[in-house]
Length: 129
Image 1: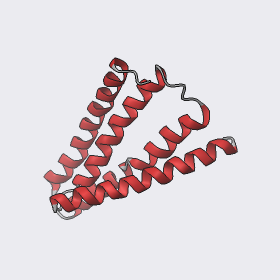
Image 2: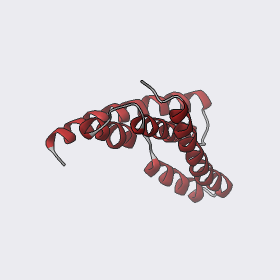
Image 3: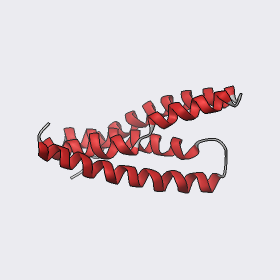
Image 4: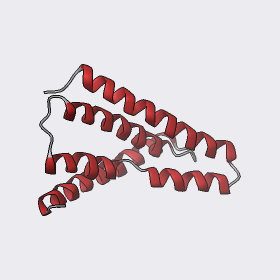
């Protein structure tokens, strides 16, 4: 990896992490639930955003090199929280909330796949300028 890529990835990652924190806290405060809705929100938005940005990068965007690394590896890599998904699923299971653990794991993965497909489809229909 060239140093230019590293700087872009770090900048994208910092922004993605910051926005993930803000959004997760806002969603969790809104729902006030023991269920990890904030994680769901960032994972689904991140999956949709990945699909949309990838479709735009294929089409009209000239997104190569450092900018591509900043968006996909930096920003979206830091914004989505699948390690948090795994941890929260285990934590639900350890509390005996097996149905919630299964719903958390299966729901985020299935809906995440649907969100990527939706983002790709939308990005290909409206290829961004």
